[in-house]
Structures are given as structure tokens and as C-alpha cells.
Length: 292
Image 1 (cartoon, one colour):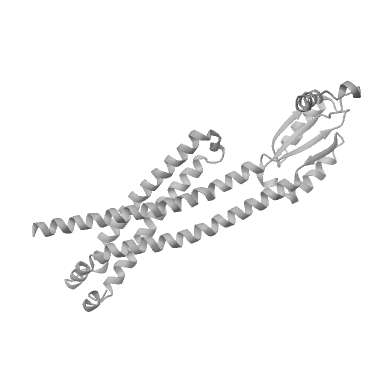
Image 2 (image 1 turned 120 degrees about the vertical axis):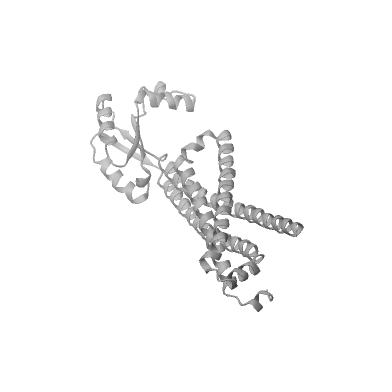
């Protein structure tokens, strides 16, 4: 009898370990999708906020007037940051890039003073740029402006496509993960189908019978979620060691939301699968248990 009990405990322990490992792998995939979806949003904002509108000032605009214009534009809702580049600074930059000074044979500095305006992410789109450009051109101190409209449109299109692909992948992976965990949990409950039937025969309520299976499933979900979060955290740390600038995109908010999503998925999916699996065997008659 003692040997049989040891074998039964060993078999149950192996089932729990198998369930935990398989659940961890599924949650790891789900966590990666959630992580990439959240990071894609930050990457989108980061890329949009690095797109620049160059405002060229008239030669008659003094440095003080240019700084006053900077202050005025900084308080506009679309401005993320503004850099003022004077005529002399623009000339130095061009001389460094071209290797020659055009003012030596022209007799004057041909480069205008400019304002480099980086827009907030919500305004870095075609429609917003039209009215922003119209508003800037009305200012008497502005001679012209330039921005890479084609690049902005391409960035917005690519981000929309990537977001759609990630969303579809997340939905498919959620369905697949539910199926995989459901099958694993069902196999675990299947081994105890006769125990469930015996408890039902002695008058135990369905809630009482389900409780230990749900408790075990939730425990497995929590442990699997912690393991999946640890693997994801190690991956992010390794990425940070090679690319420290990644923290501009992978924020603490992304990490916390990813961890919370993995934990929530782990608890809900395992508990729901255990609930469905136990209910299936509770509805079966004794003769049906031998046919499956």
C-alpha cells in the first residue's frame, strides 16, 4: 500500500511539474506578445517625436526675436522640444559636412537661422502637419519651413501595419494557449476522474470537489507566471546591457503591465480550464468513465 501511495504521489507530482512547465512556456509566449505590443506603442511615439519640422527664419530676425519665437512656440500644444540654430552655427555645421566654406566665395553667409521643432507624437501626422505648417507660415518672422512628409506617412503606415499584425498574433496566441493549457489541465484531472466520481457518490457537492483542483490550478498558474516573468525580465536585462538606449522604449510601465498581464493570464486560464475539465467529469456517469 505504501509503495502504491508513493507511486501515486510521484505521478501527481510529475503531472503538476509537467503542467507548470507547459503553462510557463505558453505564458512566456503570451508575455512576449504583450511586451511587444506595449513596446510598439512607445516605439511609435519615440519615432514620431524624433521627426523634425525645420522652420527657417528671415535674415532680419535678431537673436532675441528668435528666442521670443521659441518661447511662443514652446507653449503650443504640438511642441515637444525646440532647438534654435543660429546662422553662424548653421554655417559651422555645413562647413564641417561639406569641407568648404561657401561664404568665402559668396561674400556672405547663405545659411539662415532655423528652429528645429520636434512634435508631440499625437501631432506627427499628415492632417496635423497641414494646419501646423499653415499657422507657422503666418508668422512674419518665418521665411519657409520644411519637413519630411513622405517619411512621416511611411512611419505611420508601417506602425499601423505592425500594430495590426501584433494584435492578430495576440488573439491567435491567446486561443492557442487556452487550447494547450486546457488539454494539459484536462489530462491532469483525467487521472483523478475516479476520485471525482467517488467523492460525488459519497455526497460531496460539486463546489467541494472542484475546490482542490481549482486551488492547484491557480497555484500552478501563479508559479508559471512568476517563472515566465523571470525569463522575460532576464531577456530585457540582457537587451539593456547591449542597448542601454532601449529604456526610452521599454519603460517601467511596460514591464509592470506585461508582468500583470502574464500573472492575470496564468490565473484566469488555468482556473477556467480546471473548472471546465472538472465539470466535464462531474457530469459523466460511472460507465462513461471507462470509455474515455
